[in-house]
Length: 259
Ligand code: CAA
Image (cartoon, rainbow, N blue to C red; front, side):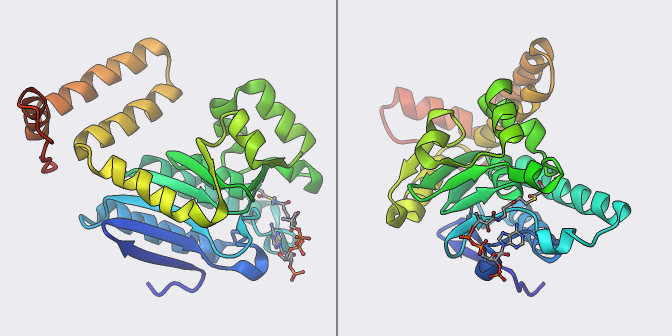
């Protein structure tokens, strides 16, 4: 597939996905969403892509779903667009590889939502977050009403969703929406450094950790820890776990093989 709205570059095992529609502040229309689905399906399967970074070109990360496209949709098409977007969020959330959102600017509506589907969010000091959908007579439709309370708690999520207030990077950090705030010019290097740190670990352990946390957020505690036990057992059956423990005892750096 030839991408017109995004860029996909592989740099030292890291797939960097850049949403590149800066004139519309990278708003998500169906073309952008379909290209992102294609890119993340490739990342999930490609052995050469070990981690992914999602970012935006220009002054926005993503300013939301494309309002000019949504404006004229009938109910059926509006529902389809929501389901398409929700499918993309679920894809990003559930691929086996770690995905880091490098939020460079506005992350509003669907932009905040797509960042929340990523495993980790870091942002530049220029980033702004918000769920302004109520200003348009709608509510978040790409998972915002569900992922935001899971990340920042029910009260703060309702505050942001009901007021539509935009918050800056420091406030996003304070409420736990982002894990790190960095100067704009360091954003990509820092995102890559996090990806490299994760890539140096045993890949099966990273995959199982991701799925165990995700799965646990959707079920009760007892079911979550039961899943954890099975995921843990899977890591126990790997060659990399033998290598990791042996290397520790032998006081050397482990060499993982994804086996
Ligand atoms: N959809 C379509 N186009 C958008 C857009 C969006 N979400 N956000 C910005 N744009 C376009 C603007 O229309 C403008 O285009 P033109 O130059 O052709 O007029 C261009 O991007 C630049 O935007 P502004 O001139 O508005 O820039 P600004 O600096 O004055 O304001 C902003 C920036 C505060 C982000 C403002 O653009 C804004 O409020 N955008 C909309 C944010 C929003 O409401 N997002 C939620 C969308 S709904 C949603 O996401 C639903 C869902 O959950 C599925």
